[in-house]
Length: 193
Image (cartoon, rainbow, N blue to C red; front, side, top):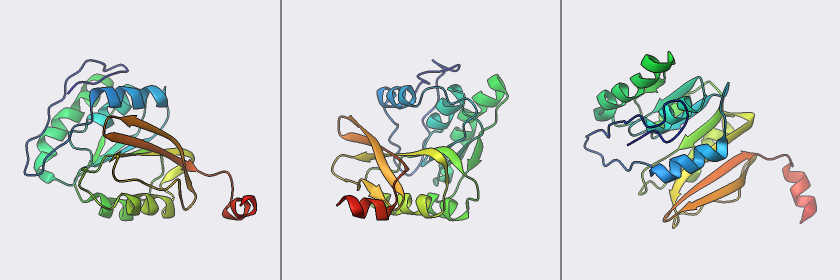
């Protein structure tokens, strides 16, 4: 796979071998997402269900730092670590890597991020629960954005607690939903009904 933009544009990353199938995010989708996000200088980024680490590298390439990733399949660790070493070698920016279940990582995480990208495997059935955990634990900053990649046949609600969908992009069978904290309280929403 290749980095689609930023200072590392064109660099290649390896796709790890492993017992679990990896579904690399399409180049076009990644390029589109980071085009929407724009310059990430000074912003923190968390890549969950990281796979090869390419989304995290792409974030650093677009200026984000600090950047963390989490991948549950430890058999991918060697390839992920080799891939993310690009940012340290070329930019002096190390990506913080965690190899554990994403669900456990979310429960233990004590940091907030400006951007969180979830890319669970398509058969994964607990997307809503992931977003609920991130919202309840306040893992994004006040003006932060959560993105989640999902198949079109697995819809998500417009509002999840204080999170509200602000954008949605379709890439064939894939959809990326963008959520931010809502500016309106539940009480104000009820008055509008």
